[in-house]
Image (cartoon, rainbow, N blue to C red):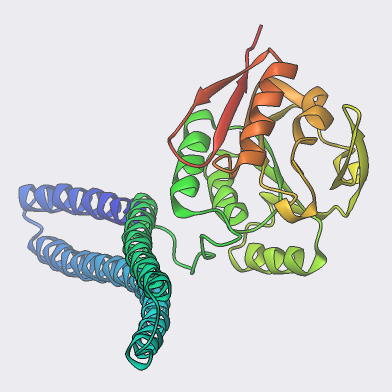
Length: 351
């Protein structure tokens, strides 16, 4: 709505100027000038109303399109969960039927065999009940999580009406919508001038827009050239080259606190200093245990006195252990938020 407010302000000022001119023309009995200013004022009013309606209609269509896309993803996830449930149910029914046929065909079975068959049927029935319960729980969890993701995305798009281009997808290997909303709020509150992101992707574009709004700079590292190229394409499409610097940083063996990690090459960090926000969203978990642990030890001397350190996926055990180890090793950092999303947020205590 920022552009609409600007257009409205220009329109009001223009109409006020025309009103003053018209008043002076009446005072001096310049009727031709009165007629001209009245006609121009009427014409401008119609034009501003027309463009205002067009602008609001465009925003409504964009919001509807985003909501439709998210709803389709939710439907697909529910469909997958339902198919899994139906397949498991059919398999157990076939096992029960085979057991029933065995009982009917065994006319001279002993009491022991009878008890064994009965026990097997009971076990199968219990297994079926467990599967039904687990599938129902999974469907409810899928619906709940997807609803939270939809709500978070609607809140994000509702805060930024000037987003005209399609934004990268959330979830999966990318940051999810709830964590993204949490990250955006933290950046808006603290407005860090220097941001370092370990692992580029969806968050890179959102951070680029925020940096353009308040004058920040973002450096984003990626160890895979394929995904780095995709991020650079998105940056160019959104015209964020002045705010975002994407760099290739291959993973290499790094010694840290007596352990060896597969972490980013420090050659890409040579010019980094006074970092006010560090976002550790890489390396991926598959590269090794506690893969993101070196992020703070390797960069602590490059951080600003009151820097924020944000670790994604802190709901996983590896990342939760990393946060505990950081807090123990670096007592000048403390956790400032917990439970808002899957992000762990630490801040250095400024002296």
